[in-house]
Length: 361
Picture 1 (cartoon, rainbow, N blue to C red):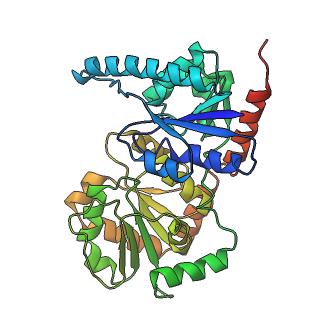
Picture 2: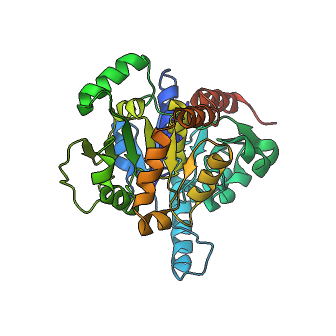
C-alpha cells in the first residue's frame, strides 16, 4: 500500500503526519513518499524517518492585497503540474495532508487523478489552505469537537496525533532521568519556556529580561528555537537549549508550569502531559483563537505579548501567583487534559486503512 504525505514550510503541518507515520510503521505493509517545500525545515526531519522526499514549487495565497499573490498564482500552477506527474508515476492509494500551502496543488492534482484524500484540521480556525483542499477530501479529521461544524458530514473528531518520542511509559523513571539530564534542584519549581519550532524572539526577550527575578524562586528550562539576542547566557538555575528532540519529554514531565506560544502542536502535547500553562499567543494570528478556546475552558492562562513588553513585572507576578496556588495548578492540569482526545494517531490510521480498502461505486 502506498501513502503519500504532503506538508511543510513550517513544522506545524508536519508533526501530526509524522505521528501518523510512526503508528503506521508498526506494520510493514505500507510504502511512503513525501512532497514538501524546497527551503522549509521539514526535509531533514523527514529524511531521518527514511521517507523519500520530493519538492514542488510552492506559492501562498494571502487574504489581503499583495503583489506577491500574482506571482504565487503561477507558482501554484507549476506546483500542480509537478504534483500531477509525481502522482501519475507513483500512484499512491491515499494522500494525507494537515494543512500548508505546498499541499494545495498536490491535493488538487490528486482529485483530478481520482486518488483518495484525507485532510487533518488542527487549529480552531480553519486556515485558507485547508479551505481550498477540503472540498476534495473523502474524510476530514479534526482536533477539536468544535470544528465538526466547519466541515459537515465529512468531519470526524479524532483529536491531534502525538509523536511516539514524546510519550512516556514510566512517569517516575522519566522524572529521575529529567532531573539528572538538566541537573535540577529537587525542591525548586521548574518553568519550561517553549517558543515553538522556529523560536519566538519577543517571547525569548520577555523571559530573558525577567531572568534575575525568576531564578530567585524557580528553575527555567528555555527552548529558544535559536532566536535569542544572547545565546551564551550563563546563570544559575537557567538551562538554555536551541531545541530538544528525544529529551523533550524530560522537559515536559519535570515542568511544574509551561510558558508557551499557542501553536496547536505544543497545545496538544501540553494536553497529553496535563501541564498547567501560561500562553502568550503570537499577535494577529490563528494562535489567538487557539489560546482563547483554552482560556474559555479554564485550561490555560492567557497573557498579551504587548502588555508584557511594556511591563516586565507582569510575567513574574503571574508565574509567582500561579506557582503559589496548588488549587489553580491542579485545575489547569485537569482541564487541559480533557481538551485533546488521546490515541488520535490510532484512530486516523484506522480511517486510512478503511479508505484504502473502500471501493467507490
